[in-house]
Amino acid sequence: MRIDDATALRAFRLIARHGSFTRAAAEMEVTASALSQTLRQLETHVGVRLLHRTTRRVGLTEAGRAFLERISPALSEIDAAVEALRQHGDRPIGTLRITVPQMVLHHLITPMLAEFMRAWPELKLDIHVENRLTDLITEGFDAGIRLGERLARDVVAVPLGGPQRAVVVGSPSYFRQHSKPLLPRDLVAHECVRFRFNSGAIYRWEFAHPTGPSKGQWFELDVDGPLTTNEPAMAIRAAIDGLALTHMVEPSVRAALASGQLETVLDDWLPPFDGFYLYYPSRLQVPPKLRVFVEHLRKYLAGTP
Image (tube, rainbow, N blue to C red; front, top):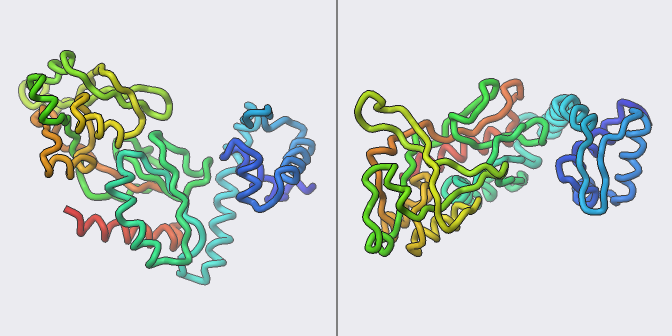
């Protein structure tokens, strides 16, 4: 095998991304045994084991992780250049890979998908839902959506919909049994849904002082309750069913608030904050597939209350 064989390097990147020879082979449209042989040849050529293999999982060695971080930017540049040639100028085709958090999936992405796919039938979307910051280049994504406060400085960030608000909500049935909290510290006497990030960390509910010398300063609060989840829809359902209070971005519960299924509390302690952004690497020339997605998403948001 030649050391400049990009196929073997792409195969390694894909196996690392999926953590599986079978899924990587399916994406490359080759057999798992052929892909395994390619990887063995690459490891023989570089003289270092790149992957840990067990019967249950495939993981990167320390050397493999460092190697992946070095080759991913170059492979992404090559892939972008090849796709630009295939697009015959400005025609958006190919697969657009985007990572988004669960909290925006159903009110920001899902409603506009059908119209977008009908408008651009030659495009394929690969949407990965996860609640963590993602290294777009290393993990092979074209773009991601995250809160502005969580973005690195070396990315291009496109605002989506302006500032957002979080709300603490509960059902009328819950408030018939519990007095409404007037201060964030009152939440220690309430049942609350706890949210778990992909990293395993538990989200600490965030508030800002509405008055006094600390006005505008944000602080965090640990809460407790009967349910911990990483699925926003489950947290919202628990609140609607009167099980507990939940802390959520306002668009996620807008319909339930309008219908009277949920009510907000502690509004004065939850001012607007920097909203969501679509981000991509600053040194990446925006491909047509990403440009039309951004344009379509902005058009959808412009027509959304």
